Length: 260
Image (cartoon, rainbow, N blue to C red; front, top):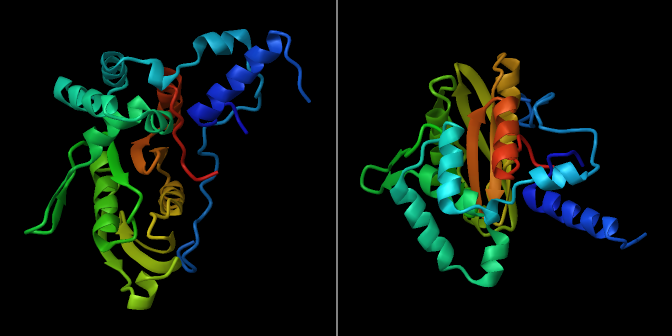
C-alpha cells in the first residue's frame, strides 16, 4: 500500500501510529479486457507516518464547507455558494452511521458534477467541465453508461471525444442475474474500442475507467481519468498525476485511476 491510500485508511494509519508513539505496543480492444495503464497511479514507496505527516494530513470531514469551497476554487474546480449550502444542509441531515460512511468533499463534488437528464428528449446535460459525478448503483443501464461516456467528454475539455456508442442488449434472464456482462462499444478520438463490462447486482464496472485510461496512454495523452468513491457515488476528473497529488494533499481524498 503506497503513501496515497484512501483518506480513511490513511487516517487509521495515523491514529495507530500516534498510539504507538504514546507507548502502546502491538504485534485490450480485441478481447474486451482492460489494457495496461502503465505508471498512472499516485504512489510512494514509504508507508512510514511521521509526526510531520500527522501534522500535514487533511481530514476532509474536519474541514468546514466554506474551507472546502476555498480549496476547490484554489484547485481550479469552481464551486458556488449555493452548491456549498445545499451540500451542508444535506450533510446535516445524515445520521451518525452515514456521517462515518461519507465525506464532505465528495458530497460537494457529487452536487457539482451530477448533471441533468431530460426524460422527454432522453438527453443528458453535464453540469460541470471539471468534475463528473454518478451513482454506481444501477450503473449497468443504458442511461447510466451513456451518461458516463458523455461525462468523460464533458470534463476532458475536448481532449477526449467519445462517439458512436453502442451497447449490447440484455436478456430478461441477464437483468435478473447477480453477475452478468454486456459489451460497451464506442470510438475514442476515432479509435474503435470494445469493452466487456462485468456487473454485479447492476453496480457500475469501474474497470471501464481503467480501460479508457489504457487507450489514452496508447494515444499519448499525459492525462488520465482519476476518480474517488464516496460510498455509492463516484466523482471523476480528467487530470494529470501532479494535479491528483495536489488534490490529495489539499483535501485528504485519494484519486485513483483503477480499482486496487
